[in-house]
Amino acid sequence: MVDFTPAQFAECAAQIVEAGRDFAQRGWTPATSSNFSMRLSADRLAVTVSGRDKGKLTPADIMVCDLAGKAVDTDARPSAETLLHCQIYRRYPEAGAVLHTHSLAQTLASRLWAQAGQLELAGFELLKAFAGYTTHDARMLVPVFPNSQDMQELAELIDRYLQQKPITHGYLIDGHGIYTWGEDMLSARRHLDAFEFLLNCELELRKMQR
Ligand SMILES: [Zn+2]
Image (cartoon, rainbow, N blue to C red):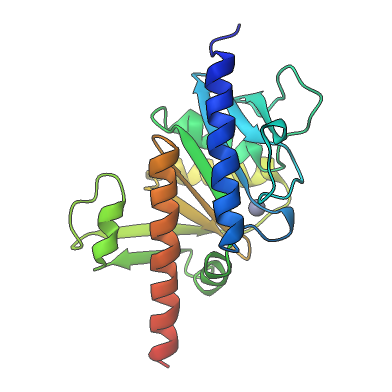
């Protein structure tokens, strides 16, 4: 069943390519790490092909897969962590784009708050950058999950968490990076930007408090 048009795929691929170039310039995607996706339809997504330099993506580096992470109409292999993208699309029908990067701040924060299992962001004006947050006087809990090379295992761990409470709007993986999402690429990028800034704030504050 084809439930999206070639033009739709081309538009998503263009947005993913542009995001990759921007994030790479900012140093958030070292050594071919990171992966990005956009929802094409209820059960199809456009996702980066495994192992490509995210600063030099072309539309040929974007492929289609289903919500189980299986490649559709291509021999290309999707990013290793595609299952985690699929999980977000399945859990949040309103999610239109998922971004995963490995910036220095994301990686350091994930290490620092791994033991606590979560990081609380509170009191920052920039919390208003997140969908549904209308005041700085809000709290956001960012879960930190232990890393694993077994994506099935990691997805199950995150699923168990999601059964208890929702995640708004992202999570960290220890020693690894961040996942965030939004209703479209624009809002997912706004969330990623805000997380990056706020994680840097928390890291700097910690240094000053020593
Ligand atoms: Zn990763």
